Image 1: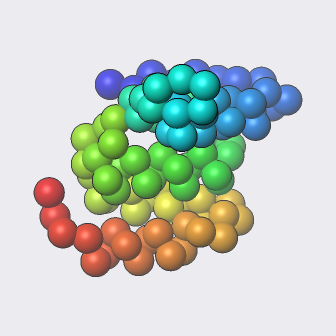
Image 2: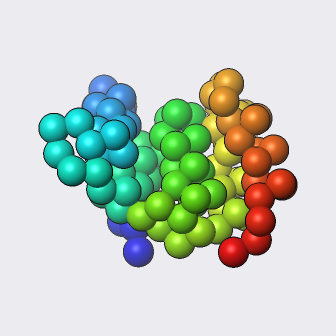
Image 3: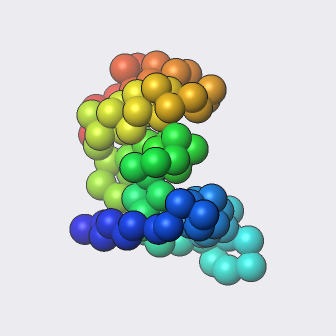
Length: 98
């Protein structure tokens, strides 16, 4: 299970960026499970983290595939101003069930 961490507001983008580092494998091996943990840590207040975590749930990368959870995360991200999240919500409705 993914653990939630509560970063300070000033560190929120650093927490998100750490998740991106694990997704991309920049300076480390790709580790989607670690990325998910970092996105969860930033996710309550960061629409970009919500969007990226939604993508991990949509694809089942580092977390169990869960289209409903992905849709919820994309919706929160869209409501928070993430421009990519609306398109991602459409992917949830057209994706094959697990």
